Image (cartoon, rainbow, N blue to C red):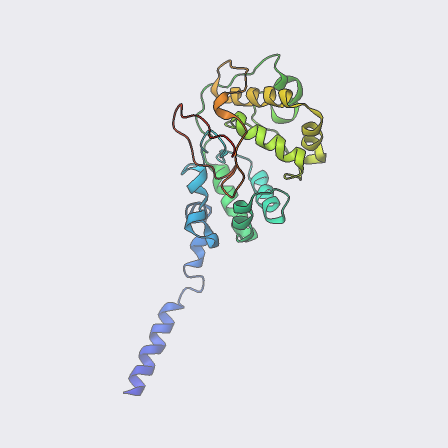
Length: 238
């Protein structure tokens, strides 16, 4: 009797270990990590905030689809190392292995860019004069510089604020840090509105009232803020 029990146990263990990688192989898939959150858990899945297709929310959560994989990997590393201050993203990034970061970044890089309408070249704008040389005439990005298409004015203003305060670091040669500390707020707002216009093809130059940068701090900030509906006004900072 004991002999049969021992044989059964041996066979059962053998069945469980027939594939040494087992379910672990699924965690190496970038899409699975994006949808499940990897070791950070399902409630921290990338898709929860950034959308099923990496489209973002058009407000304070940026799109990831079609972004350069190297850039995405660097940002995850910056979050993990504290070069970008964001409690939730830091927690997530620190629980992803190097391979996980590479896989999930490659997944988003392979997704098609969100359909944001015809881009506006914004001839004569502040963006064209000061930003296009690095980020492309239509915000398409260049080697070493991220694409800006699909970003809202509010998100861009938040990044200006973070570079100015030191909450975001690691930009190439400190360029964005210098700009954010040199430009006054109205100039930043104009550039932010230009960036937003690159995606929707309209001609608004003013900083949209619905995209005011005022907000309250907390773990649900630029990469995790819930989307607002239609014309619902922005919540004021408390």
